Length: 298
Image (cartoon, rainbow, N blue to C red; front, side, top):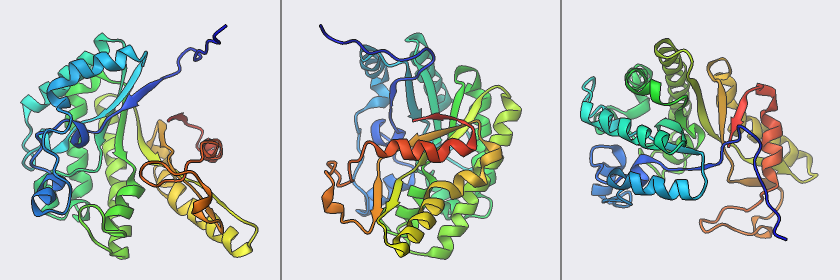
């Protein structure tokens, strides 16, 4: 007899997308600009989700999902500083209504790595006033759409953005500058805090958090490696969450990576993009989040 499995009441089971990765037709953000310079891959129509979201959500529904995370493209909503596009808001209103008709709970991300071109040319989150720009955008979106979604994610994976953009130089703005790393991290923290306040003033009952990319970080018995692992765990997994602990209602967790200092990575099976596959590590990551006493959505 085939064994049946079920989820407890209130459990969310779903999938996720990011606007620039799936919508297509976005030409006025930093990644699209850098695609024209040859530094990032061309996006084109992507999967044309902007026009195909209804049929995509039919697929989501066919998989028995009851939750779906997607992101709103800041460059669509605010193509010029302080100028908001009502047609873009109307599109995302239809997206939310489409999910709700299917009894799929939306989790809305306000920023998933891509910046409006006008802000990118002004330095992005290096700009001293970037927290106010982000809060202005976030407040506008929530005032328009807050009645259609309970769960809101301000910032996706801030540590990944910082590492890729300001250390490894793999993503815009392609810099290696540790002073800027910490400067921009502070701007992102302030962006979340200010957006949280503005969003709560507009809709007090919504739930707000970030999506944090947390690693399972361990070491061998070497004392030096143990110290390195403790430091890196605090630096990567907890610095940002500690800084916003009073400004979050839940924690969004993305778990992809396991790192054991003093051990060769070749000992692990790899994903298609070369990451160590270590599913049992998610337990240790979740235990590390217990101290925040917040609901965790993975």
